[in-house]
Length: 160
Image (cartoon, rainbow, N blue to C red; front, side):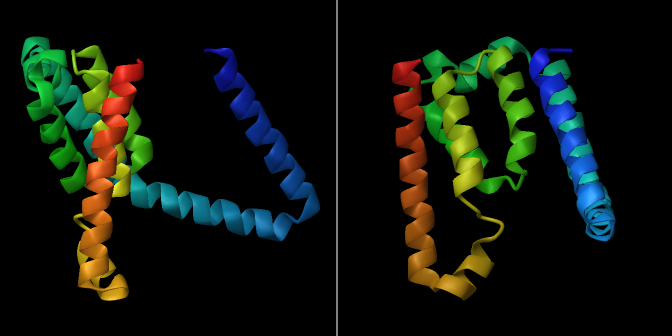
């Protein structure tokens, strides 16, 4: 276990004890909400773990490197950009998936684009966004976010 993990967990425990002392009723209510949220997100987390396991087990590194690696070029970047835009994965879950892709030979540019499109573009939530913002603004926001995500990925790839 590394120092960061110990520090974060210790800080969480200290904050929990402080909250229990300050207002036990609100703390218990917050913990109850956290447990409900955990069970709501658990199936998604489990599915992503399974997907990462299958990806690691069945897709050879050479194939991942060929599709989204350094030599894949802009086609690889667009592939992960569309994947990130279409998938509806919580961003917290996307980081282990991104790490797995990097280990298997994906380029930093591709992974940066994947995470950025995943968090900035919501194809699943687009109908709700259209209803709230209007069709023109929702499509403009998602389109600009797609372009900006690619630019961010290209900058990350150039820097790193």
